[in-house]
Amino acid sequence: MMVAQYDPHSKKAKLVTIMRDSYVNIPGESPHYNKINSAYSQGGPELLRKTIKKNFGIDVNHFITIDFKGFVKVIDMIAPEGIEVNVTKKMIEDMNLNVEPGAQKLHGKDLLSYVRFRHDKLSDFGRVQRQQEVLSLLKDTFKEQLGSVNGILELPEIGEEIIRDIDTDMDFKTFLSLGKVVLFDQVKGIESMRVPVPNSYSNREYPHAGQVLQLDLDENKEAIQNFFEKNPKPVTKEKSE
Image (cartoon, rainbow, N blue to C red; front, side):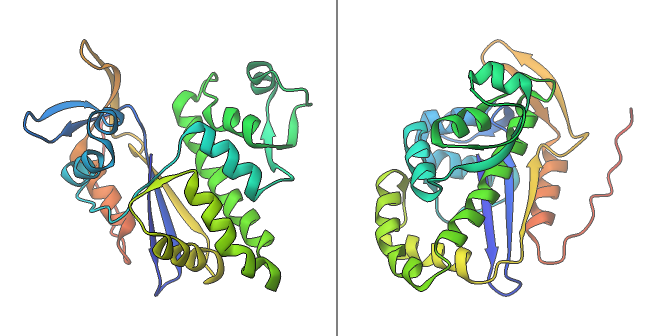
């Protein structure tokens, strides 16, 4: 679950990943606390948007969702030669890959397993890192693929293929326009952040939700808003051990 922002003035892109087990207040006729991913299962993108705004004060303008099948198809279309990532012995055993540990090019199905892998000491936190890593690599690969005149001319056709495999509230013209901006407007890197931020949560368990990340909502709200500001202010709150 990611919230992205692009500032055309600074030409900087920012990406916040909100961990799916974050325990938040889900608004509605009967407001209640649960994991943030349950907001999507209960009310789709609109309830998730309202949940993000209620808890973090961020107003999401548009949404894009993709399922596992669509992820595989989009990856193989954008990066037919695969995307190079570092795989460990544990990942190879878990994913049943026929490769050696180290830098390997993975294709759609195996790359999906790579971003979903969480059977190491980092668990979901490692998965968040890999998701952000692959998204950045995918952007770079797509930009290289369309770096020629012929590539630019093919962008509308590729966009039509991609939009068939995703769900979004954007019309095709808006989707294509945003894609061109991100790919060709000289984006000066992608800054990323994870919510919850370090030392701002505890592990808890509730009968109705199972194991969750109990967030310090005030601290995380301040952190995410500062991150999206042009001139962010440091979070000065200290946590006692």
